[in-house]
Structure formats: structure tokens, C-alpha cells
Amino acid sequence: MEKINTHRATVYFAAQDRETAEAIGRTAEESLRLVHDHWGLEPTGDLRLYVMNSWPGFLFHAAPVPWRLALALSFPIWALRVRRLWQVAGGWTQRFGRRLAVGVKPPRLLHAGDHSLGRHVFIPGASMEEKVRHVACHELTHACTCRLGLPAWLNEGLSMVAVDLLLGKATVLPATAAALAAAPLPPDRRGYPAFSRKNREDFLCYFVLGYWRVRFLEETRPGLLKKLLREAYCPGEWHGSLAAAYALGDGPSWLGIDRLAATHFRNPSV
Image (tube, rainbow, N blue to C red; front, top):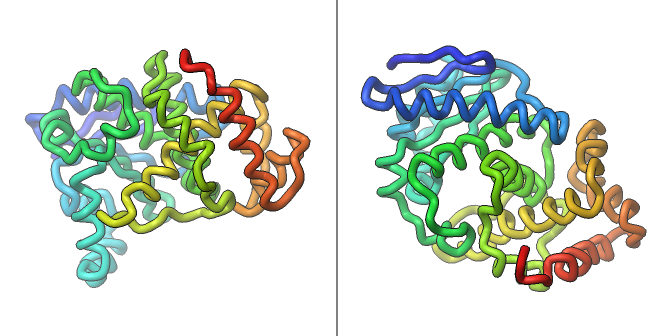
């Protein structure tokens, strides 16, 4: 496996993927600068980027040697879930102690993947090269937040809004803002629902609601998230801090923020 060293990270790739590796390296420089300037976030530890041609190859190459034995022994436990996600995910972020590994599929694998989920979320028309930048920025933002233990919606929302900022345009279908008026998700949940064919809609809600919530916070209280991200919060404390910023009650009434966001985005031009 070949590698390119950038100012912020090392990019690993197979020889045929050099062009993609160079694009990921450039995107990493832009994305990490953007996320730092906008929210004060940056990755900690050893950051490695991969042009990801297979999930076993990515995980076992990225893992430090002591972790590889543990991965091999536990393979039957996690392999089925990872194989299922491989079809729909364009990239992954994995933490191995102080090592952060970000994998991004090359254009040929992005094209061949299962796009049934993405069609319900993203504005169509992006080229495969733009999708590589999209995925790389999304995952690099996760690399900057993974140590914080953020609620799932906030974790995804920051990554999705970062992509908008990088590309200079909205990437999510305006119609998905209707999710703000639907049944709410638990506001303080850290983890995600297990992905399966039966709960695809619940799984998508964490992405869609996160995007619109973060956009709302950024547009109506610029600088609030940057300020709050400097503090160490448990997942359950986030909704109280945000409720206070909008003069909402604590507890379940925090979800009134979705009502405010739905009103804010009701204009179809967003």
C-alpha cells in the first residue's frame, strides 16, 4: 500500500487510486481547517486516511498491531453488521485508542453502492468526484468529534452541515425538513439504532433531524455550538443547554426546538 503525507494526516491507497488519494488529501486540509475555524474542533491523535477498497482491508490495516488480534477473535460478532453497512456507507471513521482511521470509497465503489437511502436525503446531481469530497469531509468531521460523545443527531448534523460549508451549497433535500414535525427522537441518545432493512427510516432520522437542527442553530444563534463544544457535556446535558439558549423549558419540552426549526425552514426556498 502506498501513502501520501499531508500537513494534517497520512493517506494510504492502492496504486490505482492515487488520483482519489490526492483528492482526499486536499479535502482533508480544507475540511479540517473549516471545522476548526467554524466550531473550534480538531482531531486528536494519529490521523490516517484510506482509500477504502474493502472493509476488512481497511480495518485490519488501520488497526494498530495489538488491536488486530482482538478484531480477528471477535470477527464473527461484528462482521455481519459491518458487511451490511458496507453496501450503503461511502466512508467510515474508526477509533483505535489514539489512532483515528478515516476510510473513503473510491468513485468506482461509490457508484456501485446501494443508493436507496441517499436518494431520500441528498440533492441529486453530484459527480462522483464531488461525492468523494462529500464523504471525506463528513468523515473527517466525525474524526474531530468522536472523542466528545455527542448525541447521535448532533454528531451527524455537524458532519452534514460541514459538507454544505465545504461545497458552498445545500446538499440535503429541502423536503426532508418535514421530519422536524414528525414524532421526535430521544434528544439525548448517544448511539444509533442498529441498521437493518426493518428500521431504515429510524436510522435515517438521525441524519435528517441532525442536519436541520444544526442548520437552525447555526442560522439563528451563530457561535452557540462553537461555545458549547468547548465544554465537556454528557449527552443528556445538551438538551438543557440548548433549551436555555432558546428560553424553552428543560426536559421533554426541549423538543420545542424542532417546532421552532420547522417554522424557520417553512419557506420552500431554503
